[in-house]
Length: 423
Image 1 (cartoon, helix red, strand yellow):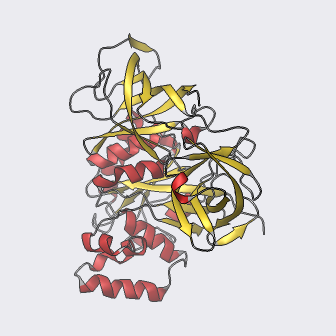
Image 2 (image 1 turned 180 degrees about the vertical axis):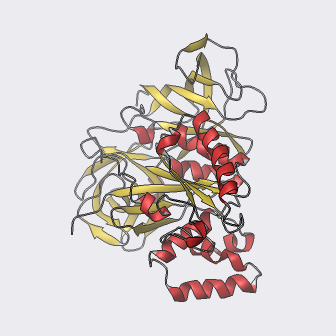
Image 3 (image 1 turned 30 degrees about the vertical axis):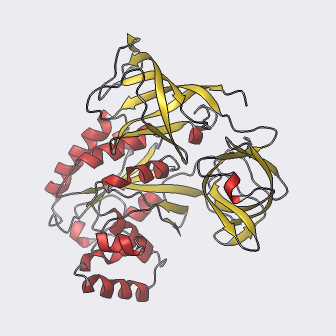
C-alpha cells in the first residue's frame, strides 16, 4: 500500500470550546479508541461528576489533568482518513499552556480552530488564530462546535461564523478558502456522518474537510535538522534523544552534531512508534540511539545536524515580529523569553529597526523608540545564552518563534537573517 501523505495538525481555540472533546470524538469515530475504553472513561467521568468529559479524557489521560479538567501536555495521537495520515498535536487551550501550544503550532501543517457557537470569539480564539498565522500555519479549518447547545440553530451559527470570519480576515487569512463546519463533538453531529439536525448546512462533514488538506512537500533534500524535545537514558541501550525531524533525513551510521552543546555522536538506531525504522524523514517524531554521547552532554533545545553542516548558533539575529499584547511597550534592552523550536531562552532586543504596515508591507516608521500592541516591526535580537536558530526562508521550522513574558504571549515572529557565533 502506498504511504498516505502525512499532516501534523494542531487543535487550537479557547479553553472551554471543546477541543479535547472534538479530538476524542474523532478518534472514537475512526475506531482508534475502543467502545470498551469509551465505556470505562464514561464510568470514571461520571464518578467525579464530569459525565460530558469522556471524549476529552481520551486525550487527557494524565491523572492530574483529569482532576483539573484541563489539558496540559501535548499528546501526540495519530489517525488516518481515506486520503491522509494525521498526527494530532493536541494544543491545549488553557492559558498556562500557551507555550506548549506554541511548540505545537510551530510544528503544524494545518490547524483546526475550535469555536463554541453559543460563545463566539473569545480572547484565546484571537490569540491562537493570530499565533497560527504568524507561525506560518496557512491551512485552517474552523469547527463551529457545541451546535447542540445552540439548538442546531442556523442563525446562531451564522452570527458566530461572521464574528470568526472578521477576525480571520483582520489577521490575513483568505476567508473564502477556510471551511466553517457546524458540529457537535459531544453528540457526534457532522463529524463523520451528515446530521439531519443540521439539514440546513450544505457543506461537507468535518472528516471530509480534513481530507481536503494537503501535506507539505517534505524537505528531504535539505540538511538534517532535528530539535531535541527530550533526552532519555535507557538501561542496556544508552542515550536516546527524542524529537521531530524538521528537514533532511536521519539514518543509522550517520555522524551528527548537537548544537549549541557542540557534541558529536553517531546514530545507532532510529525508532518511531516503538518500531525500528531504516530512516526518518521530515515530520517523523522519533527516538534515536546515539553512540558516544552521554545523557548529560545534551539537552532539550539542542538541534541535531550533520557534522559537515552543523546547525547555526546565533550571535544575533534580525526578525520580523508582531506584538500581540503588551501591557506597556517594548524598547531596546527588553529581555523576555523566546520560544523557538524546542528551546526557551531569554533574548535581548538590541535594535528596533523599523515599523511596518501589516496590510501593505511598507515602512511606517524608521527606528521607532518603542513598540506596542498591534505593531509589526523588524528588530535585532541577541540571545543571552547559546541558541540555534536559522533564517525562516532556509528552515521555516527553526526560524519561527514566540515571545512570552508575564505569563502571556507578547509577540510572535520569524527570523530573517542570522549572524553566526564564532564557535
